[in-house]
Image (cartoon, rainbow, N blue to C red; front, side, top):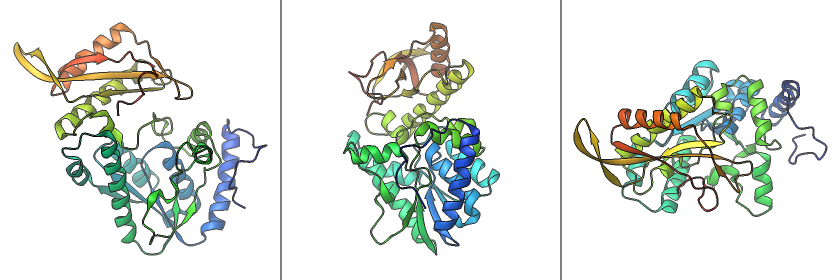
Length: 327
């Protein structure tokens, strides 16, 4: 019997043993629910969908069809990691869709944050639905719904994303194997399933991806500056042991330029804003105190390695008054 609700007496999953027990139980339940039918999953590379994919691969193998949509707004190396882990290592039935041009063409000239979010979300559903219609025999849709999603939906904080807003003609039965887990439990299960540490402990990442870290109308060159500067920041945080100490850290490249000097010549280029915050509940957040020497080094790397950036700023704004993301 599939648990629709988290039992009041459920022990928090904190150990590999408890995780293995949960995995064994879910594999049996998935096999019972799905039988010999096919299951479709939108695989983003985030922790929830990745853990669901790994669970389903263990339970039903090639009956699972994963669709990874690259909307061009992912961090550096993320699409490649999804392909490497799921197709090459786990032998998953993975469909990779590079829809970069399609998304960026739709976003061209759009500077309103909410409109950008709606375009990205709506286009994702369109692309996913198009891929789903090409497949035969799909009767189930797997989702990485977790217990806080259910609670927030019931409390009216946010709408639960059942079926992700798919068109009505796509009437799938849902498979939600981690719906009774909290995020920390999903990570323990992911560890036990053998997923890479960087995937299991991936930072929170907004659905619209780097689109909300490129304020104003998105251009390909500025988007690439966000992607490259973000990769440098993540690499330096990893080298300096800050990954587990700072809750979220990223770069933002706004749509304005300032005068600088590069190679002895005037350089009219963008600035890069570094954002690093600590929080437990995301309702409030404090600014991470980073070593001065590290910030000098990060600034040197970004201004010399990322085309189009001549200045690096650090955002000292807590939440409130600033939100974690810029858009």
